[in-house]
Image 1 (cartoon, rainbow, N blue to C red):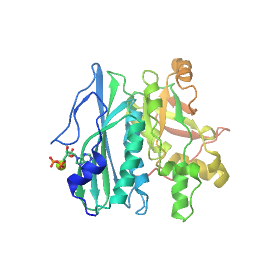
Image 2: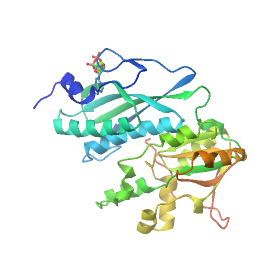
Image 3: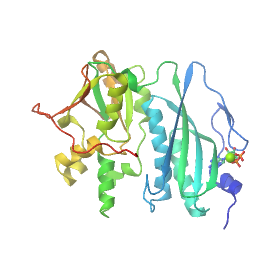
Image 4: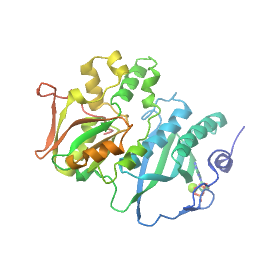
Length: 313
Ligand code: ADP
Ligand code: MG
């Protein structure tokens, strides 16, 4: 069956509006929305390209989930509450089964975070997905990269390196353990981001490896960091599959974890543990006045990185 552009939109992307702040959603030349009083609008966009960000045989459900998750992860890293999304799809064909699977997975994650799809575009070409995500944060409470202070403690959520390990295994044609599914189905840490408002001095989501992403905080904040590599949280699956040294290298330089890295001043640590009760997060180091990322092990010996984080150019 051959679906035309507007039929695709109608069948798969035009969902009933559930948000009162959407005045006009899908269907007109553009959407109209309103921002709640005393809030600021946080805006992000990310593109996923077939063959670059995912293998050509990746399931439509995984592509949809990841495309949306990486955008929501950027909102999480800003401490924003997601509200709306736009979806620009470039498709090689109008395969109805593919679209159905994509749409189902897309809206499963969108509904989980109560975000409304308010517009987009569909064009023909090599498969590529561009999503815009829009969220709110109370005025002045956004989490930024440029506010880390010397003395802040550095934390990360959950475990690091799992997605990079899954990627390594896929490249060797080995199906990764389901617990490594973060590569295809990352979980945007929206709730933690919201809870960090007014507590964390700075935050970032880890998309290119801890060393590179923490490095962005250090650069923007004009500070340095001391990190104990023995405190970096690693999953049991990681430690059962590869050596500690390999695992640490993946945690520091492997991409696609979409966990949060954030820094908290010492006088807010008690508040932090109250707010994040029940969540998994680990202190890995301290922000220092002297610049640069200083990696050490439990014995205080310097650790030198073997790789750099992922870079497109
Ligand atoms: P225009 O030609 O004015 O850009 P389109 O025909 O591209 O309009 O889109 C018609 C309507 O459908 C618009 O409201 C647009 O935002 C929406 N739309 C198009 N593609 C998508 C999509 N993939 N997901 C959600 N809404 C979409
Ligand atoms: Mg258009």
